[in-house]
Amino acid sequence: MSAIVQREIPQVDPAANAIDFSRPFIPEPFTPLFHTPAYGRLTAEQRLRYNQLHAGYFHEQIMFFEKALARNVLGRFLSEPLPEKLKSGVQMFMAEEARHSEMFWRLNKKCAPQFYGSRDFYFIRVPPLLAKILDAISRRPKLFPLFLWLMLLEEERALYYGKIFTKSPELEPHFMAVQRAHLADEIGHVKWDEELLDWIWPETNPLLRRINARLLCWMIDEFFSAPKRAGVRVVEELAKEFPSLSPELPRMRSELLALATNKKYRSSLYSPEMVPQTFARFEQWPEFAPVLRLLTQTE
Image 1 (cartoon, helix red, strand yellow):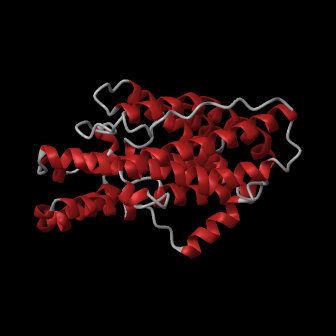
Image 2 (image 1 turned 30 degrees about the horizontal axis):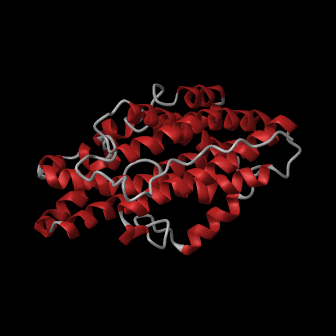
């Protein structure tokens, strides 16, 4: 078995290398409130702070995906009779995902120790029953290969996002550094996702494929599209820090939730330009027609 190459985690802890809170942490279009009228009513200081709060949630999403889903899926495949080269790749995949989670948590903790000093998640709060269900089914990827499709979709989108980060010199340097490290690894992750799908999906029962495609459609719509629970908590936290926004909070919530039916916004989350390999694979299998309609917001 080939050795796993360890990639160094960017250092974000030295006191001499402080976070620059005068800069945005992520590109503005990655923040949902940017796409609402409410954003235009915020002051420059409030916009900047919203950007920084949402960046913490942005990292939480990656950590949740990698720790709660990808680790279970990939770990189960290691017990399958994979080709030796692919099994070695999956081992490296898991090691890199663990390092990513550590990297993002360390940066979140450095930026907001009051939120992340003793926990990974502040804005994401998964009900215990749902957490148990997700844990159980993600450990059965041969029965629920939809998680591999979700991994491919989200990791190819991470490539697109990472490239935008690297072209945004106005962003805070620590955030640029971790995104560059993440981007470097995600290229291999997309490749391994595709190899695992080639190994399992054609052998999956056609009825099970259709069931998984429908479940994937629901999961994307519920958790990986327009802002709902955690996205609203970000603006609630903003209002705590800026009490003058309290009267505006109901309107901000309403405008955020309205993005769920905003076709222009939803289409900006996924497109053939952003995730070309995933779209091409969806188009190869007729069971994914509902997923393509959801992602492109077509009837």
